[in-house]
Length: 266
Length: 343
Image 1: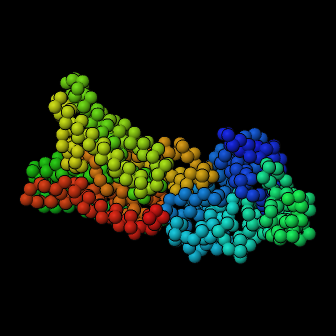
Image 2: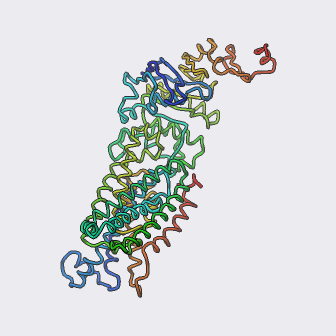
Image 3: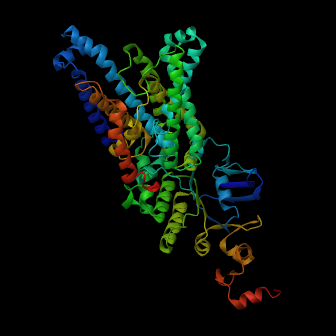
């Protein structure tokens, strides 16, 4: 169970709080999509929940324990992340990258036991990275790297998986495949998956629950249906060029007439 | 440990033992293998053989193995810490920094008077090593600070420049120190394993042994750091503490080498690449023994070449290491998949 208790995230500099007083929870098996425009605070929120950045106020609790005050080794056994930043050592091969996910579970030498190998084999199988296990990570295409990083996070067998913009470099079939796979994994392994994405259509079709961030620091939670009916989705994303259509449940590119109709005053 | 790593380790140990034995037998005076072995084991041998092997050649061979091994391990640590495939104690100016530390200490003692010089001479091993350690640590901290702002190749150039600056200062300082009567470390600006006296060997070996233990202890966390700082933190690594520990290990490994053998070039840069190719992984722990053995083998090979029975003693260690090492570095920069990202 993940509980955010009046969590305020942001920076202790002039940028200040990005999102304030968030109260929300997610149950094991939930596939949660975090949606919002660039700069709405998705990454900040995810980094804070992952314990990689200090909260300004409030707390994020995983199974009743405050994530920020967990010992780093304990946290690493329960939370896995896939982030947008990639600053890898170029000597790493793909199998090394995935095997490093088991570091929180291994002894001081980092040697792999049978259950470690099992977790790695499972992750490799469901992500389909088998063909490039022996290649250098830095030689892979962006899409292949994303698959490897997802395999690495799965191999960490976490209670909570936090994935930031993972589908950005994938083609449409791969996006569908990866997101559906993550949802199935969440249900099967009773993991909570938090995933941020710009892929609205797909997220709305797959998510059990959506956390919606608008540009003004507003935060709404609900099932895709609830959010589209309440108009929250439109509020967060509508612009001159795109409009959410609650009837059709998807975004539509604004035509000249619809834009004129929306802004009669101008 | 994988079969690949243990097989490679065994082969390297055998090669190193064979090369060490060869180096002990030949030189200006060639000794039969039986006499050399006899001198080593303390059984039948001539006095001359015993003297040559135990007093002259063995300390040199031991110093080459220990120093080469230390530089190889330090190279593994630094390449991971700086995320830079051409980082090592020599290329990033740590060795030169250590020399400068020693030069400053010697100069200060020379100007302070004969008492300071004799004190320094009395505790030559530890005091020179300590002075080198301070210099190495300062150079390493400076490079870490710079490394956050520049790319891998820029860092290499800056490291080499810092090294030239330090070496220039060292030579000027030692000139004045010699004038003022502190001629302790003349002729040490070139790298050599021949200057290590038998009684100095423990002072060379002990910090390196500690450094090796520290390297092994940090190996697992350092492997996580290969994924970058944030991922390392997500895997439970305390990154700042790890950086300090790796830095301490590097100083322990490198400082005695500077103090006793001078600026041994290229060994620490090449050995880790060699180790990665053999191990088929970039994880730190399997690389450490392989890089240590590879570094020892490279250093001892260089030493063996300059101590071959030439007409006269004319070769310098760094000349040999540069002839072999510089082209290897060029090949690494051009062809290594590990550097491709930065080309």
